[in-house]
Length: 387
Image (cartoon, rainbow, N blue to C red; front, side, top):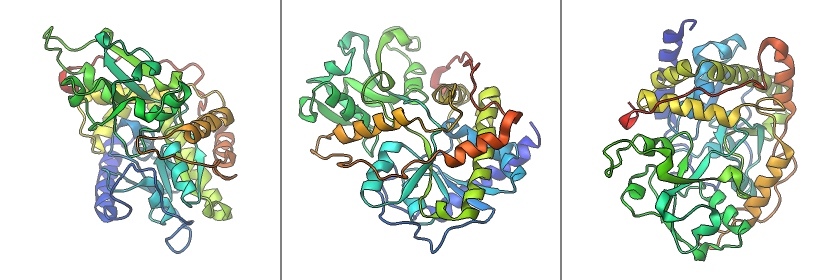
């Protein structure tokens, strides 16, 4: 990798410094669905080459393409100096953009739909994840094989806006939130393995791997996929679009901001194409950037994240209208355990816009494979504890 170590170490320093600077910006429910009203609150739109990208969580291979774009010099080739800011739950990504503390942010679509209904003016400019990565996992003997089987069960959820797929899928099955016991779940699988939850929430790229890295006390060996029933929300009516890149809607009216956005997206596309074609390098880059996961876990995460992006039939980041509408419909139908709706109205026109990602794809031309039509995941062996 070209100057890989130098660039990665520089990226890690930038991430840590920026995190300390911005730790107080935004509310304290880092993955919350409620956003701040209004447009860019920072006193104008940044159209310069120093760019801030706000993540929705800590450095890990879920964000490998952005770190790869730094490490491989793709942002630099576009004349951009990009600072990647993590959130450990202390920053709401969409708030950072709405308040003018970041130029772009990574956030799940349903969470931002909630913010938009509260008055935030934000636009999805690139839908990086084309598929949902959320699972509900139960023990094989539980008999929970579909969402319809949730009735009367203890269903784990992280909350903070991560629960809306659960409630949308339940609504599609005619189940209301009172038909289950929602158990607040930490961002691990401990409560599930202890038997406190019947079906735990998990991401394909993270918590599910944590299960497969854990020892089955009945066998003394690591748990195997056949030990579990796994419901993928992608296969339900509750599936919602997840990691997207968001920008301030009003800033996108500025021609200079538009031009800089296309440059930014070109580098992002290159970064994710690199992560697709160099999975081990992508995992190594995110570890160097500050991920605390072990090497086999990080490689699993890089591989599973790629599956949510590739293949991208219309090009990476292009928002599919049907998938967007399915997300909106699910958000409108979902009612949580407090009887609250995520949204009550269709989001306004301009909540997503393919203009900039399509221009970035067109400008890259044959330089980069932007669809990954021949993409094949690699085989990953998880070790105990993700080591």
